[in-house]
Image (cartoon, rainbow, N blue to C red; front, top):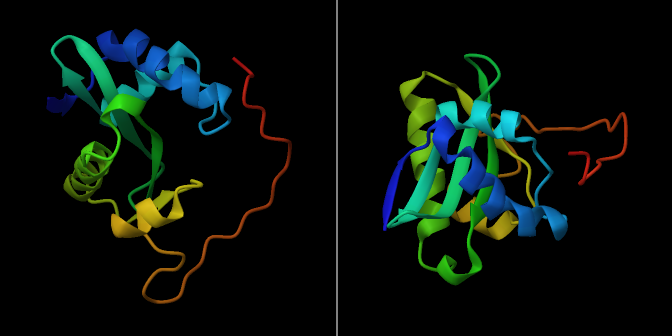
Length: 139
């Protein structure tokens, strides 16, 4: 298994990897164009030619990036692959000089084990105002 920078050529395989997670409402649906954009700061885990994991950051500003689309094929879960993908994303953000990374997920314990928490050391907390329903199958 190898983890490498993703490219637009990986978009179709990433889309296929994400599909079951989207249908279970664990990930939001993305168009292939949106996935291509995420490959800019994304990483894929490969076993031979098969994509078994993906994660990316979307950089909003020098202050903030968001961890997005973390998906690991069920057969490859619990092997440290998700942690490795998150680590690559954190390192990319660090290299880009980003100050903070936000992650929105239902996998709280996993993200906490990767260094995320509910508040920043100076007690800043993320608060949300939902403007429209989250549609999991828009695309």
